[in-house]
Image (cartoon, rainbow, N blue to C red; front, side, top):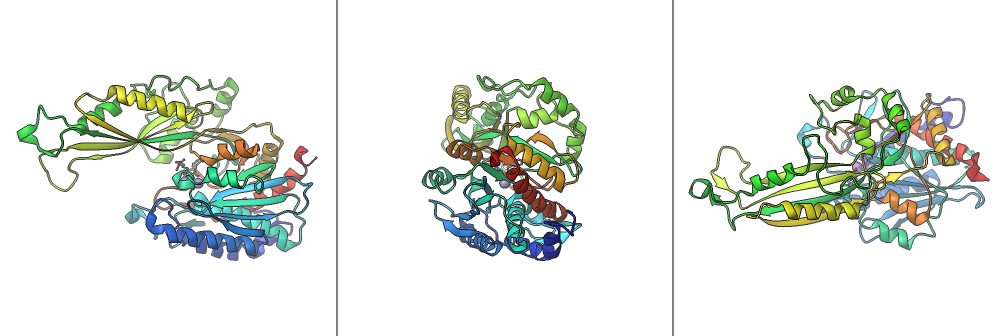
Length: 463
Ligand code: BES
Ligand code: MN
Ligand code: MN
C-alpha cells in the first residue's frame, strides 16, 4: 500500500471498503458477451459502469451505441495543453463454465485469502475499476488532475471486438489522445512487478470434415467407409512436426529473430520450463525446442487445437462411424506477422492436405494483429516508474502471449502508443474456474494509475 498519510494513499485507505463493495456489485453482473442470453446483462453492466464513472467525477459520460454492445465513455479535460491519457478496458467477460469447478458461484463475488473470486475479477472488471478509482481519488481529494483523461470501456473484447473498428472510425475526434493506457494483462510474478510491451496476435478457424452422408453402423461399413474423426486427427497431426514447429509453408517467414539482448534478459528471469510446468500444474511441456519457455510465450508464434468433437461421446459404447467431425484451431502470431497472410496460408495448407475421401468446410472467426510497444517511449518510462513506485520494487519490461485485438487498431487509427500496465498475476485463472484478483494488487493498481498520470505530466510528452 502507498503511504496512508499521503496522496493517494490516504484516499485509498479511507475508501477501500467501498471500492471493494462496488467491485462486488460490478462482478455480480453476468456480462458474458458470447452468450446471446446475456445481452441484457451486458447492457445493464454498461449502465453500471457509466454510473461508476459519473460518481467518480467523469464528465460527458455516455453509453455510446455500436452495432453490438455499447461503449461506455467518459472524460475529464482539465487543460487542453496537458497530455491526454485514453484508458481502455472491457466490461464483458468469458463464460463461467464448467460451473461445478467453482468453489463459490462465478457471479457471487466472494473474498477469500485476500482475493476476490468471481468471473471477470482480473479480466477485466477489477482492473478497469482501479483506473476509475484513480481518477476518483484526484477529484475527491481536490488534487489537481495533472493530465486530461478519457476512458472507453467496451463490451465485446472477449468476442474479438467486432463493432470496434466502425466505432473508432465514427469517434476518432472524440478519442484523440497522446497515449492509451490498458490494464488487461498480468505481471510476471507476485514479487516481480512488470510492464508489458508486446502481445501476440491471433487467427481462429473451425474446420469440419464430412465423410458419408449419414452416420453408419461401424461393423456393416467399417474399413472402406471414411472416418472423419480419423481424417481430422491426421490433418491436425500434420500441422506441427516432432519439434513442435508449425509446418504450414510460410508460417515463420515474417517472424523476426529474437535479439540476443532479449534472450539474455529472459534467461535472468525467475521463470523456466520447470516453474512454468508447476504453475500450470502439468507434468511436462510440449513447446518448440530451442526456445526458452518465455520466448515461446512472448516472441514465437504457435498453433493450438482449442476444441474437437464428433461421433459418440455419451456413456457406454455405440458402434458408429460418424458422418462428420470438427475442430477449432487458432494460431497466436508475433510482431511482423500479418494475420491475413497467415489465415490464407492456413487455408491453403488445410485444403491441400485433407484426405481425398472427405469434404471440407472451413470457417474463419476473428483475428487480431500482434502488438509491439517501443520501449524507449517516454510513456513507457512513466509506466515503469509508476509500477515500480506502487509495487515497491524495480519493475521490468516483459512480453505477453495473449491477445487484445483492438490495440493495434487504436494505435494505428489514433497514432498513439499503448501502455500495457496490468496488475493481476499469471495464476489468477482468467477464463477459468475460480478467477480471482488480489485486493492488495487492486489497491496498488489504483496507486500505479495515479503515479502514471503524475509521471506522464512530468515527462517529455508534457512539453
Ligand atoms: N485480457 C485478455 C488478454 C491477455 C490475457 C493478454 C493474458 C495477456 C495475457 C483478453 O481479455 C483476452 O482474453 N483476449 C483474447 C482475445 C480473443 C477473444 C480474440 C485471447 O487472448 O484469447
Ligand atoms: Mn481481457
Ligand atoms: Mn479475456
